[in-house]
Length: 118
Image (cartoon, rainbow, N blue to C red; front, side):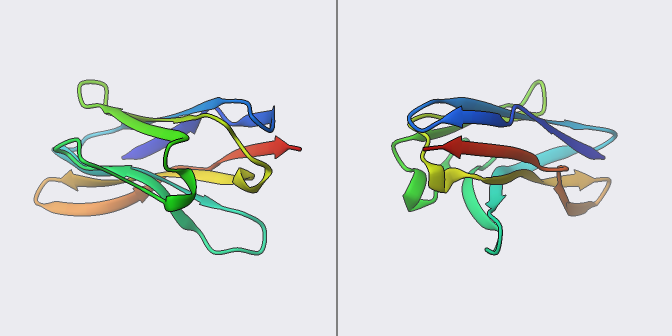
């Protein structure tokens, strides 16, 4: 099982970016999918997550600016980031709880850099 993230880049403050993450491999189901980020010198933090029933959870710092969505048919999760701020600069990682046979495991994508200039 692999998570492949894409869509990072450099953008000016106030701009937008869209991150995408696709799960591939052999598995039974995916429950929670989410995005985390880690800025230099800081701990990795949750940005947003979406559960299998489509309920969502956002970090307070991104509420109203970011939107997470998933496509269960394609096994993908996207993060639409609007009104970006310099403090959003970080490496963004997708994450998912994926059931393989009878066991549920947690997986991380490889990370994609988001840089917001002031």
